[in-house]
Image (cartoon, rainbow over all chains, first blue to last red; front, side, top):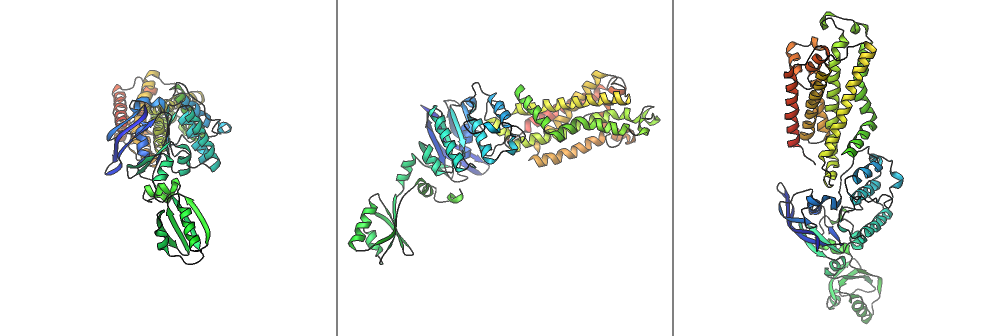
Length: 297
Length: 241
């Protein structure tokens, strides 16, 4: 049964269309990722799923009901929402835990134990982020919606947070995760929806997204003597060839490396500075979102 | 809800400068003015009373407008601007509860400050205790209600916390003027005195309850009406984000 069901969601702000037509469903215990450039409609979509906004069109249901009716079952971590400057970490935790029937304390797991008396306004960005995650999980939610989970965290804290999320998931919680980090999506998500201009342009597992990209393998080298590019293009495994200065970049299917090296061997050309790349989720993302605004993270 | 009030109270107290100012400033002003001998001498302008006797009601005005217009709108607008209300909207607790908590805490602070002023006036300068305590209580509650409601209207309509602060300060200055805080009311033209009877928090009703007998019910009714109208406008126009 789908825990989150979004059908033909549409939302505009004045003349600007934030979300055009978005449909997806998330199964129980799944970690569902939402990727996309700024302004692609990611945050608006999760705000509709959190019950913060009313869609103009389409329907959203969580646990079979309207999101606003199941707030106590949804834990939300919002982008750019703060607490009163002078509230202490411990006070915020106890205040929020009083809103829920069966609160859960993730503060020590998130490394907040030694900061309980610190005031919110004095916390570093990373600690604010961790407090925000602890508050999202405090109501023992069945569904957690995390917008920009690890933005502002250092690499170590990011990895720690990922393992917290894996723990949360293994407790059966369904997670909707908005992220800018491909590594995060590749590590955590079962499926990923790539947003662009208010629509979903691809929806697949991280590995599935990668395999959609043409020329999933890439070979670069500097030939010892000048090489006729047409010979490479004639190979069936090759999908594209480009020359950058002396360097030749060939992309194509998985068997590309063998085909290229055999050709070079026949021509008695030595390949210097040989490098082989597999396409990553990064590349897949850039290709799917048309490269626009993809360099800003 | 109790938990919210408790936390809001802690936050109020923790903000030392503002909480001390709103609780103690009227008393301090009374002590300073009372230290001037001429203001402790009965004079015919005040109907044979001393300046400080007739100034007590203006001190109550000061308390109510300071808390209702300098503290309340700023905090509420900041809560909205920082996304505190938005964050709360994702929990089962409606963010209106947070505003209610703010109102309760600020109202309690105002009452405390008024009681303190009465006490200091009585103990240090022998100012009469309010002649009509129930009338004064009504005047404080209704006048405070009107002032707080104006503060909430400003918080609701101002685009951001800075604007809210600016607008509130203008209204604050005006109400202090009409309430006889800058210049004692007997020095103001009679038309200004009349206006002052009808602008929140209603200095005339406070004055009558303190020094005379019962406050004029029309003044109290006006304050009630202001609270009701401004409160409705604030509730109708309030944006949560």
